[in-house]
Amino acid sequence: MQIFQAFFKTLKKRSFSVIIYFCIFVVLALMMSGNGKKQIEVAYKDTKVDIAVLDRDNSVLSKSLYRYLADTQNIVKIKDDKESISDELFFRNVEYVLIIKKGFEEGIKSGKYEDVVENVKVPQSISGELLDSKINQYLTELSAYTAAGYSSEEAAESALKTSEIKVNVKLDKIQGEGEEKSSAYYYYLFIPYVLTGMLMSGIGGILITFRKKDLNWRIKCSSLSEIRKNTILITACAIFSLACWALFVLLSLVLYHDDVMTGKGALFILNSLVFLLVALSLIYMVSFLVKSLNALNMASNVISLGLSFLGGIFVPLEFMNKHVVQFSKALPTYWYVMTSRTIDTFSSTAEQYHIIFRNLGIELLFAVVFFVIAVYLSKSRAIAQHG
Image (cartoon, rainbow, N blue to C red; front, side):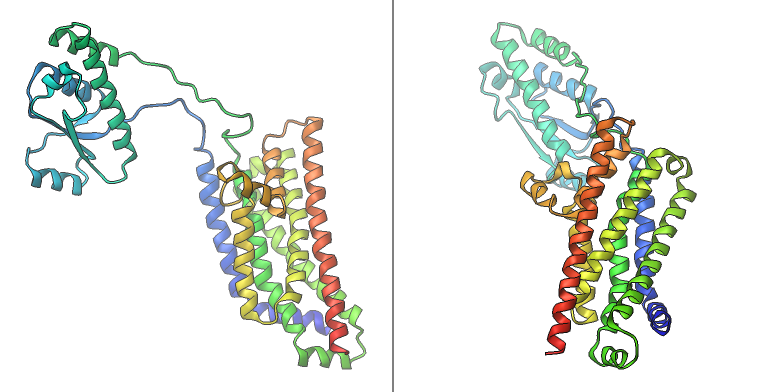
């Protein structure tokens, strides 16, 4: 009983780091679950850019280009001098300045139109690069019409009519990817990160404290056996961990009641409970590998962030290199994320049940492996201490 009380007294001193992780989790969960509703596939929609056009040729074809840009972009009038161009770009009044050079029309008619325009744009502007492509396409159309024998006026009108042709664009997607995800999905997505970091910082430090040589030998001098001591410590860790997990579940019920009080919500909760066992086993193992609280704090950050980035929590798996994804399969967080994705698109099919419970089984296997390694390390340390 004294060890049990000492555990929670020590935990009280480390409560600050636990609270920090909890606050980080709440902020992440609220931000991502709020944004998640907005991440819905929509039809492709072109955007307009604030641009300035300086027509130094003042010809029929240059005016046609101006009209095309006026119809598709937001034209901003600026002075035609170097200082004004620099100022307008610097203050972001425009993103793109197009200069139509003298001799523009002659260049189009001759087919040598590569240098008939120049531009100045905001560095690394994606919209600027897209606008370059659009302008080059329009110049190609003007040149093609004039080469076909059209007069300047006819080429200008034909190019404008061609530019007005619209195409309906549909973005294809793989079923289950890119669809709207529930708030519960984004909330429970971050639980592995916070559970690993919070519990490692909290109970991991306590386990190391109880294994310090002086305290450990004082306990050995009592009538309490090593097995009894470890059982009490594991029980205390389990109680605290379950209390933290229950707090997260209650918070999800308050914030996202409609999403959580469903069959999917129950599966999200089950998945997080299984990962709690993984986190506990992992922390128990790590507590035998590090010897100081400073080393534990470093390990806590590296492990929690590493599992989150490589496992698909912070960076979606579809954005990762295929070789990284293959490596991620060796991490418990990968299987947690894959389970969460299947749950979010759950429609009670036999295949989905198979995937969910197979993944939960793999997560439990990780928990068993970590625990077995921890037991081995514990026995190795005991043998080393007794010579």
